[in-house]
Length: 185
Image 1 (tube, rainbow, N blue to C red):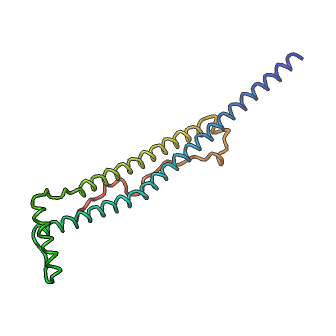
Image 2: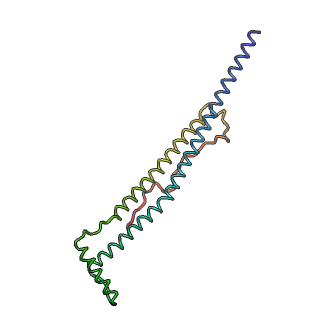
Image 3: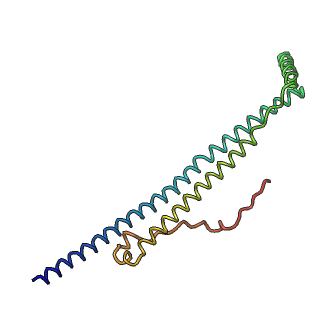
């Protein structure tokens, strides 16, 4: 009788160990799977940030450059005295512009800031692409961790392959290994 109790207790302990190991493996697989999903969501969020930010930055830089162009054109015209005066109102305006031109002769030329804006745009674009690259790397790392877990010896036998399918790492688009040609024409 004692021997049968020991066998039963041994089987219960063994079953409990197997159950706890399965539970731990299952919970860890769930955690890794969620990390993969979160990492892919972060990649999408980075893409969305780029889609939201870049057009706004480009429009801001274009607007600032257009504004500066207008200011510089007016200043240059005033300094050069380029005015088509045909009416008395134009003559009055000519007098004001000549006064402005005289005053401007003693002022510093307006400082060009659009070049700085273009530089800031480039920095923002680079930062955005770096964020995307980091998010892709984090996603691939999460996929590696998840796939390593579900494909392990014990886990591959006990985890359902439909519930825990192997995930694919981020793959670059076809032809992205070739450097793009930059042209300023």
